[in-house]
Image: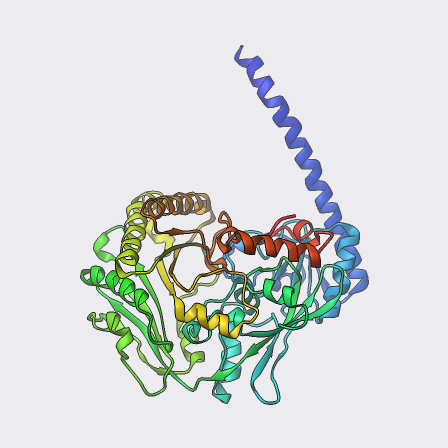
Length: 510
């Protein structure tokens, strides 16, 4: 009886697995054909396993979880190269991935198994306009290189807060940045995009030329085309007062109160904070608070708006006047190359200190309540970093985005609320723990969401730049914006090339 039961159950599974194997073989054959066709068109720009260029380009990722095995790597040098590549790839039905800065730690988001990996590392435009009011920057760069370029001019742009973060991923996700309370999301500081569409056409998107595409690229990721050049607004920034302010475990209650206090009363546009609660082991007394503090002034230190944090005694701090390039490099020191990494995003929304404090407490307590289960499964020596980070976004930020970014962005945030976004961060050593971490962050995230939903504080917005692969993005933008993104995607990609041939990343749908 048991034998016949197994036959009945396993027979369809065997048939299904055989079909999958056949599908995988077809995918690999299509990709191989795509590589051959690309090599015919670009004999010096296609690289295979065993070559120095392939080995180098296939290692340029922040997290080990991103490293896969593409059949070939294509390294274009211009928008026209990519335009030709798209028609070539579509003709062979090959699947492909695109890597810009390589900072999103999601398997398959910016690389691919059995496909073509297109790397943008040779799209290296970096120049100021004649009046220095805008900067043209290619997708090859990371933000530290951009800030270093601008520092001699006493200029800056709304960009990444850690030097190793890539330019295109941050801008296409919306772009949380140091200057958010002054200038809004980084995407709303984009003046123009040079974009290669699915049909191989190269277009410019601005507020007056292809304005629907211009809007969609501000938070819509790579569903519409591949951006080969960004034009960003610049502004004067000689030095800023900035650093990390760390506090001992005994002050954590006051530190959590500071998060809610600052978030509920964001009154100074020059300010920016990124508080984090950081455990260093299973003993709760080993947890500290550490806040990245930023004030856009080369003369004012310890401003009143940051006192909720600076009034707490510090066990260590790096506060000083420095350039944004120096500060991004300082923050970038926390990035460990060749690590396994996951970020998970979430948000609570409120209007008062009490609401935001309740949200902070629920998220903190749920996260730390789940930690013993993770420590029980992974040796402490194999855990590099665990953090719970916070990012408040309120009326100053959202209104600045609206003012700078006409015709607006796709994110759908309401300036009558304060969005207290958070990110769960785990970095670990050893691929044998990948599934354990994935299961833990997913279950912990659902526990947090259920708890904040029960309290009436949950918001569906997940900031793409901090999101995990299992999370939904576009429903959090609101039904109207999600539908608009899908409509624009269908307009600019009617054959659904980016939805089918480019499987990775956050897709808007067919």
